[in-house]
Image 1 (cartoon, rainbow, N blue to C red):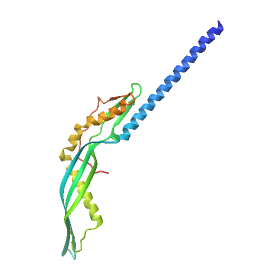
Image 2 (image 1 turned 30 degrees about the vertical axis):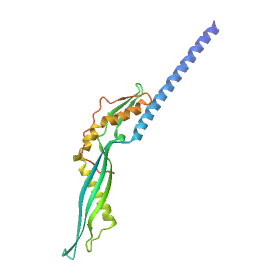
Image 3 (image 1 turned 180 degrees about the vertical axis):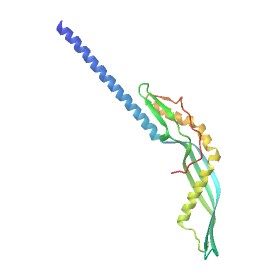
Image 4 (image 1 turned 90 degrees about the vertical axis):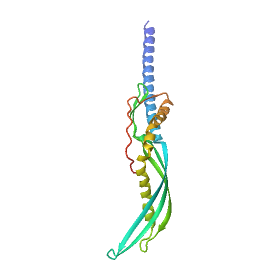
Length: 203
């Protein structure tokens, strides 16, 4: 009888240990899954939703004066700027929380659309040097930066931000697809997408 009782007790203890180890393993696996999911979303990083083409004429003029401002020399150029702007979302700014109990990724904050890249191509026309005021390499670099800023200032009135705003759900859908790959769920019920603001200078 004592032997039978010992076998039953031993069996119960073994089952308890196995169950405990199984629960702990499951917890570690779920925690690991949440970390993998968050890392995957961060690795997507930037998601372009719309692009716009711009063609602008930019007038450049620089005047230098010498001899007590009695003599001036002007260098100038007419620049045709062709640019392509990409607007979308930076996923590194998404605020996420992982609920391991329900296997749910919760989005608490989604960023506003922003200018992700601007590709510019400059063509120079009517480029003229002054007598003692000639174009240098640094002038062309400055001209290129000024032209890019000129395009950046045009983007808010172009409607690209509004178009990107309408594509926000597509960006969220991308996150949802990533989450669903390992059997989790995405919760964005409480999400409020911020309104776009004026374009900021690219880093």
